[in-house]
Image (tube, rainbow, N blue to C red; front, side, top):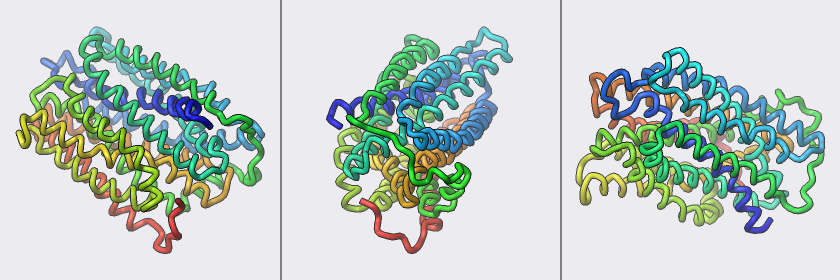
Amino acid sequence: MNAWRFLLFTCGQLGLMVLARFFFTWVQPFGSPPDAVDASSVLFPAALFGAVLFGFRIFDSVTDPMAGAISDAWVRRGRQRRNLLWFSFLLPGIGLIVIFLPDAGMAAGLRWALATLGMLIFFVGYTLYGIPYWSLIDDYSEGDPGRKRLLSNLLGVGLLGGTAIIGVLSPDLVESLGFFWAAVLFSGIAVFLMALPWFASPKGLRSAPTPSAGLPAWRNLLDALRHRRFVALMILLAGSQMSFTVMTSASAYIAVDLLAGTKADVKILLGPLIFTALPCFALVPWLARRLGWQRSLVGASLLLGLVYAGSAGLGASVIGGPLLSAGLLFGLGGPMVAVLLGLEGEAVLSCANERGSGNTSVYFGVYNLVVKTANGLALWLTGVLISLRDGAWGTDAVRAMGLSAGALLGLAVLIYFLVRPKDSPAEQT
C-alpha cells in the first residue's frame, strides 16, 4: 500500500464519523434546543427522547455480532470483504437526513415517526458498513504488524477528522442553514468518502477460506465473550466512548449556559481538542511500541477523565476570559483522545488474533455491540441531565455532564483492572 491507498482507506472512517459526530453533537439540541424560548420550540421532550435513543442503540447493537458473522462468512467463501461496502455506504447518510427532517409545524406523531425511522436506517446502515470496513485492517495489513498498527491509527485520525469537520464547521452551518439542510450537506460529503476505501485495496489482494471456516458463528461469538482480556478491553473502551459522547452532546449546552455564547461557539470547545489531538497521532505508534496498547489506553483514560471533570468549572476566567480558559482546558485533552482513538482498532485486532484467524469481524461486531450500548446509555444520561437543566438544577446539570464524563472514565479503568486476566502475557507490539 502506498500513501494514496492509505488516504483512500482513511476516507471511509472520515465519512462515517462525519455522520456519527453530526448525529451525536446535534440530535439532542435538535430535539430540545438550548436556546428555546418556549415549549413550542421543543420537538421532543429531552428525557423521553434520550430513552428512545437508548432503545435504538440497544436494538442496533444486537445486530453487530450478526454483521460480523456475515462478514467473516463472506470471506470464508473466498470473496473480498471490501465488496460488502457497496451494499451499505448510502444508508447512514439517508438515515441522518430523515432524522433531522421533523419541524415544529408537523404533528407530534409524524415527528416521532420520522425520527424513529431515520434512526433505524442510520444505525443499521452504520453497522452494515462499519463492521466490514473496520475489519479491512486485517485484510489490508496482509499480516504486516507495522501496517496493521498504521491502519488502526488511521481509523483514529479519520474519527477525529470527522469530529473536527463537525466541531468546527457544523455550528455555523446549523445556525445559517438549519439542522435539516446542514444534515443534507454533510451526508452528501460523507457518502462520497465512504465509497473510497474499496479502491484502497493492496495490489493483488486475495480472499481465501480461513482456518476457522468450520466453526459456527455462535461459537466464535461465545469465544469472544469468554475472552477475559477482550472483555476488559471492551469495558475500558466503553468508558472512553461514553465519556466522549456525553461531552460531545453537552458541548452546545456548555457553550450556551456556562460560557454565555451560542450554538456556534461549540467550535471554541471542540476545535482546540481536535487540533491538539491531530498531530499527536504521529506519536501513537511509537507510544504503543514503547508501553504496549494496554498501558497506553489506561493512562490516557485516567488523564482524559481529569480534563473532562475539570469542565465542570467552566465559566470562570482562569486564564484570559472564560472562552479562552475553556479552549485551553479542552486542548489539554487532545493528546489523550489521540491515544484512545488511535489504538482502538489495534487493540481489538490483537485480541482477535490471540484466538486465531477467521473471526476478526465477530470481534469488531462484539466491540460495536458494547460501545453502541454504552453510547445509548450516555445519550440517555445526557437527556436526563438536559431535563434537569430545564427544571430544578439549572446550570448545575450542565456542570454535572462534565463530572459524569470524567467519572465514567475512572470507573471504566477500575473495572478494567478487576476483570483483566492476572497472568497477562506480554503485550503484542
